Amino acid sequence: MSTDTPVFYLPIEVAARELDARLLLAHRALAAGCRVVIGQQWATVANLANVRPGVVFFKGINRIQTNWMKLARRAGHRMVAIDEEATAICDPDFVVKECNPALLELVDAIFMQGAFQHGVYAERFPHAHARFRITGNPRWDLLRNEFRHFFTDDVASIRERFGRFILINTNFGFVNTSWGKPEDFIRICINVGYVDPKSDTDKKWLNDQFQFERENLRAFRDMALRLEARYPDHKIILRPHPSENIERWRKALDGRPRVQVVSEGSAIPWILASDLLVHNTCTTGVEAFVLDHPTITYCPFTNWCESIFTSNVVTPRAGSLDELFRMTDLALGDRQAFIDQGRGVYRTKLEEHFSYLEGPSSTEQIFREMQSLGAECPAVAVGGDGVLLPGRAYSDQPMQDYQRAKITLTAEQVAIRFRQLVTSIGQHAEPRVQTIGDSLFLMHP
Image 1 (cartoon, rainbow, N blue to C red):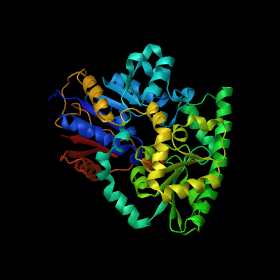
Image 2: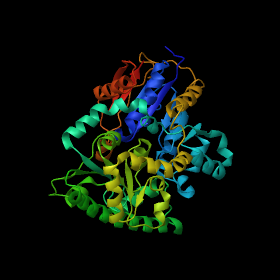
Image 3: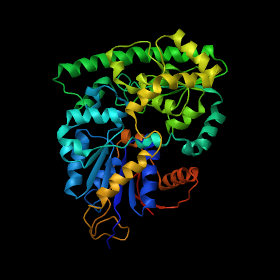
Image 4: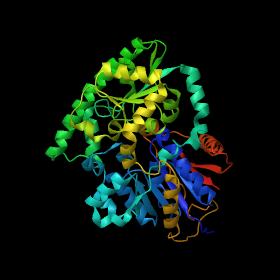
């Protein structure tokens, strides 16, 4: 059989961070009669030659994604990408640091989160300008008012477990890397093309970024304990970035009954359930600000590396514990005054970096681009599921332990999450979710 509607391939690296945003796109595609393959990125790539040519949505544009795109191109797929790592970045040199120039010859469209990123790319890569689209980032769609009900149950569950709490989100994935040692983090940066070991500029960044994270990590441990002592009516919940070693934090804060280290689920319900978010260089700081939620950047140690990160530029900043306490007192005592003050100072800067925070959604912009490319995919004979090529079988790609820690899903979990998402906006849909690999699924309209 053959079908006229395109297939969308939506690879996911980290389930907690990416699943909901990808399900938004899946919902739009399924409503248009498309089939969707969604799940772990390694299994998706392993099957690109076994499935009908469609449109593959990559979450990055580095050397590894370039190699995957070569496979996709040989199999007849069209390709789009968004640089998720650039979401956190506002320094022009670092905005393009993840980009492997060779990828620009392969990809059909790169989705830009805002005018700032688009301007940087247009200046650095003018020959590829036609491939750049300002669409916003679909993860911000989940922050819109219409999706607040999506998180109601999760927020209620978190509050029931922990009561009132101050949330601390960290982002120290170099000095406290989940890869093992900082040397392993450097090796990964070299492998993906982010760092050139012969570059003096890159060597300086590694040295200074390590210092920045080391000093602030120490300060964050002390800050968590000081917050616990100062605000006895609140628990302190610390959520490390997925790139961090959570056990190091648990050991550092062990024995403190009102300080807990957690790493579960999407960050959004944890933000909404908290009374205040404190962060440093973490994109969840931007998410909290967009949600009109009290948020503070705590950065007692700084060097030039801090200026790289968007979240520290667009959220209120405390450079000392005294300043943090003063701001926390205001946020807890007069929440709306604190929010209004921040919006007045930082909203314009935020909108330079992120488009489609209001009005048409980012998901809709991206869907239209992918649908247009899907119409250009060759029509081929496929099996009964409308995706698998005749004579082929879905190939499992065994995950390593670190990969499994990032994404482990069942068809039931995907179906439930999808249903919750759609119901939250007053709609109804019951797609069939078929397991085709390890944490990999085919969704039928």
